[in-house]
Length: 402
Image (tube, rainbow, N blue to C red; front, side, top):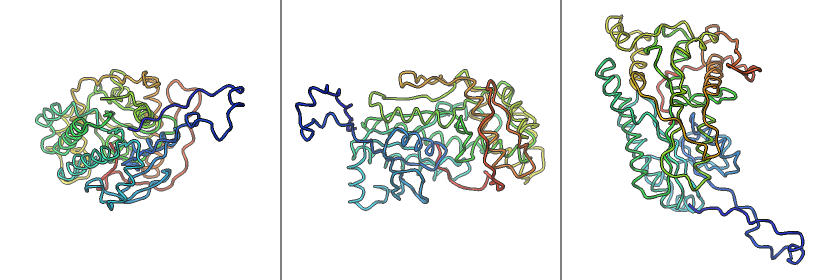
């Protein structure tokens, strides 16, 4: 990376009086803003990272595949699965020349997608991003997943109750593991960030993409599901999107940061038993929590072809990363100037995320519209804007999350 030198200590008034303004050393001027190439800027993680980097004064160039991303200083239409992002040679060289750091958030996270597509986007795409960072002499921050360490657990749970439905989950974790290896072997200055489940903004509950756990909450609130695979003691390690974005920002701007960064709650992660009461206030509760093995047995004996059956099978597959898992290590971020996660912050973010989902993604009349106060807070969360429309999170699509 082209390290930016902090501005020199200002001279005294007396010394300034002896030097004409035109001859003042350039070292006294503030460093130019970092130019950061960001992939996946429209996803749940990428959008939060875009806001955090922009607030820090970085010039963010968004590499977009289909649609423009508001908030970026500039957008470049390209495809990470193609060499040189599919850009003309001169455009690619110019982009590399101007880039100081790269944040790679783009990924295929659709667990129902063709596993070949998952590998193409997550592994080959990372190869092309690494090649760009090497060409630019840029620092690379790679968004991975904390769940890569649970691949063996997924295989055990697949054998116990999920079967072939867990194959896309295994493929996703394998793709992220390979992507991490590509980054480490590249020899470029790099940081691999490993977040757990990413929920909405801790202050507003804002959600960019409804997928994974968030899609599950919508399905419950809409009445599409009456049971949820899990046990009361199962932990859902989750982090607010804005908190993760602050860690990524620090990884970009502090050249001393190297290696792996866990962005996880660890033993502070709430259990299903702690979360279920919070959901009831939004009309998202009332669902039966069933051991995954028992849930799979009921699924096998139930009516075929129903929407609830298909959704339950998806949730069984996703639960393979949670059921019987050991805690992740807690995030160690004090050295980055970031306060560690707290149980209160996690529960507050979860409540506000649930309120946002109930307001915007559950069909009108299904979920309660009352937004309760987060635990331990004296004031209610910010008012959710009115949106009479709603969208289903289960339509087939690829996402740009992490």
